[in-house]
Image (cartoon, rainbow, N blue to C red; front, side):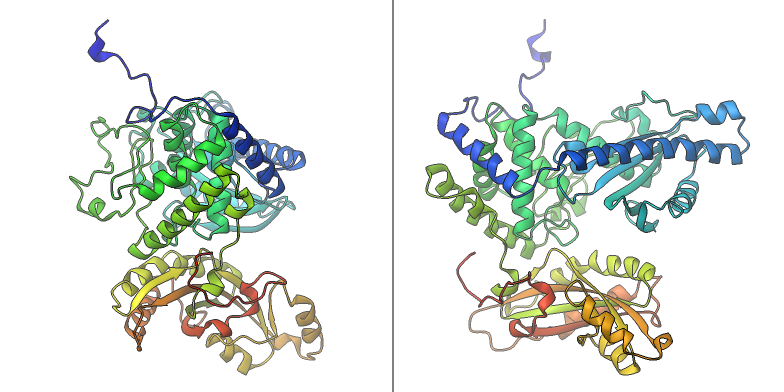
Length: 535
């Protein structure tokens, strides 16, 4: 055998750092981690597992039935319509084996070439709209990856679609082969990528049990520290999974406790923008799709913390990261390193790692971005549009010399306002909410208020989503003028071709910490004083 052509006996782009097996201490620490993850409710119950399996089975049958019906409408014979087939694949946390309570089920629906994207979205939405088990149904066809979002038996479910250049989709079809991408449009390739990346991640980790327990831990930590959000400029699900998988490759015989400890230290010390890779990038594929390559593509040079997806065509999963969000994540990695040192020496607990963020007590001043619409369907699209652009505002704020940090919160807060007069409508439009706004904390009181109004026909319903950016001002600065970046951002998002001035709006307010609304705090949680101590 030619030794030069022999394949490496390790997973990843470098040799492992260590092949050591777990010590008794590491085994004990890992056992304590699993106990804490169970206590934190990160594992789904047996009932949830069964419900997920039932839902996936139903969608598999539904997709095949839908393809058959559309095929018949397109005048295929009954035999050919039945043979057209169809198949679904999962991706995300469910595919990776780290599904937990309240998580989404992500489903990729595969169809043969005669089924168009318009066919699928029209017929699937119409069909699901008649299901009693379905609620909160919405189709976002102009998204980067078009998606149908819904709750099926109260479980959040997301459907994406791709058609292949095949006349039939058999049950035994696998989508790992790059040749299946031939002649597909960019949207179909993006839709396929979630499932293809998940397949590659699972193939490239040396120990699935260690990977899955470690990833559950990191996901919980990132959510508790409010840095789990690709759209806001932090890392998203696939990025965290690739990072954990890379640490598993470096320590192939390690177990979860040791993997997590090494994860934080390695990521904290990582020499960004050196990319994180699970395998070499395929840059000579005959399909010739664009892959991440900063030597060729100028845009790729500006990725601050590049984490590269493993399936072809390789992309940067973290292109949304800004200078400010990078700084925030590095702070959190440093905090986690300190806590892990205590856990590994027995002077700390896993629960310390998962302590909730103190975002709404950390800063004295905040930007409050209030997005509003007059219908739930419009609001879903409009608020999603603004959310996906908040990172552009963060980038503009980075140019303000007196601002040390602009820290976006990882999610928005939704409210429904039942306005009983014109003044209330004007107040909501200006971002001034009163006790007649409905949310989870005052819906009973609001219902009584509405019942007290005689002319209920004049009640106007306004939907709002509020995003927050914490502001850390440079020491010694006495003035902070954010007029230009905020006005430019409002102008930018209103440039959307579907923006309607009559039914949509956006307001940005500068608020002090003492003015924050109760909705941003958990029940029984008090507003914490701003502190310079990391918490």
